[in-house]
Length: 172
Image 1 (spheres, helix red, strand yellow):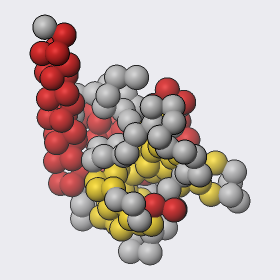
Image 2 (cartoon, rainbow, N blue to C red):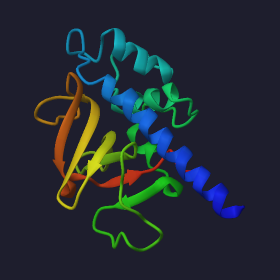
Image 3 (cartoon, helix red, strand yellow):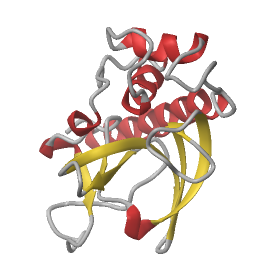
Image 4 (cartoon, rainbow, N blue to C red):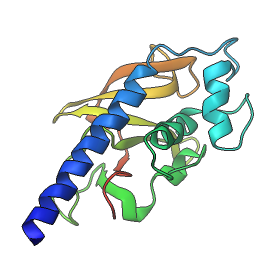
């Protein structure tokens, strides 16, 4: 019976990851109206986190996507808060075979650390992960990978550029 419940939980997690992926990939191509963190869709992402247009919105995009999939958390526009210790599954420069850390997968959330700000200051979704590169879907970026971009893009980033990855789908 316990094995059946475990299989069912894994199946549910797989289905939830696929649902979230469908949501965030459908947003690829959304663009700001005037390059000032604005526009109909951007306003929707920000409103989900109780903010108005004009604020950075990468974390709000992540939160909105989870909300569309029926998950109540995360619900934040502050990218550092997407990485509480109990949710971190991968960390840069750490033996990621320790502490039950695991390989990131689609639907997990990546964070990029900015030393000038001394914090994670950009976040988005892991879509594919291998030893050298991660394919992402992220909001408030652009073709060059800026954290103050103009839309939702699919990006290819070196794994070495990722600071932390969190899992909001699997129960901690």
